Length: 372
Ligand SMILES: Cc1cc2nc3c(=O)[nH]c(=O)nc-3n(C[C@H](O)[C@H](O)[C@H](O)COP(=O)(O)OP(=O)(O)OC[C@H]3O[C@@H](n4cnc5c(N)ncnc54)[C@H](O)[C@@H]3O)c2cc1C
Image (cartoon, rainbow, N blue to C red; front, top):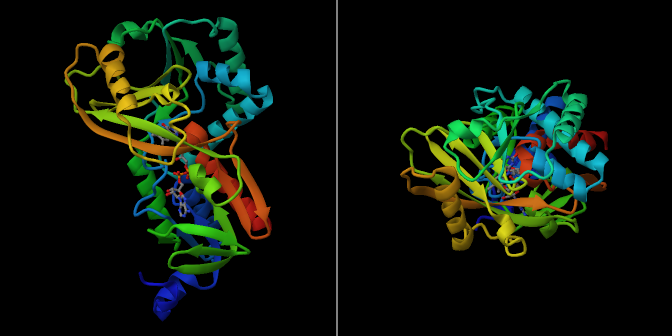
């Protein structure tokens, strides 16, 4: 293995010497933080270290829902988090989504303002009053009225089975995940941000990152490793595997948009005439608290069974892709954004809606770095 000490003059000058900021993790947060730093100070020397040959966490593996909260998920959150914290988190997601759309043109990331639907078999909690409460909350954040509406009639046209209630969020949408990451990466490279892939950071110490290739010093280190954060620092972040599948193309697919059920534990959308379906972590919460990225037969089979009975009944399809990624979760759904010492800042624990919240976190991290 070629060590940093044996790199050429050119390589050292470009990648390892006189670095202002090292960012660990090339996901949405790491890249948006790098871009925000360069925007504030174009002369900063920023290097992103990524352990995988691709980003290997959640940002290239997610379902592409540009979402900030469905009624049943917000209801569940209100039962286990403080009300103020729930709304602060929803506001961060909403603002993050807005920020992302300012950063990456909608057409470049394939943004589709398709709306989302929260589907329920039984409805015990989503009353007219609760919808009004949600709409008031969203209006305070966004200035937009009537974000959530009851839209049960859509179920008649959709071909979906086993759901009796549907609540629409007109302000959510979908993206093409690969296009978003590609756009962020291309912009980073254009701005002179350097990437070292295949570089796992083993430890951080007093402004130095240690890797198997050697160490790099930086004035500031930003840890953007989300579900892997506890490997480097004592942080209250647990990994959570999330599993997904994508079908083969389906004739006469009538489903268009993004859909959630079971408080967000399941989610599906169309990608052209295919269906992406993910979730099922609730079948084995403890078992899915893992850094392994291998899909499991148990959860994948459950997804396939729900696909056949509830989402695509009577349709002919095969499963074309199956994968898993790693999310970062904790007791609260609020991300951890903090300075941990003179040289180190962290922005981790994005939960299940990091597309929305990620760019805001990246930007906030850059401010903490520059305020130092
Ligand atoms: C299957 C799945 C579906 C999802 N669906 C959605 C969705 O539809 N909508 C939504 O908003 N969110 C979704 N999410 C969540 C969202 O993708 C994440 O919240 C978001 O991508 C987190 O971005 P990040 O940059 O913080 O972390 P990540 O994308 O995980 O990036 C962290 C990076 O750090 C790298 N790293 C870790 N440790 C080290 C180390 N020691 N040295 C160097 N590099 C290291 C990892 O390889 C990784 O690339 C989903 C997640 C998964 C897994």
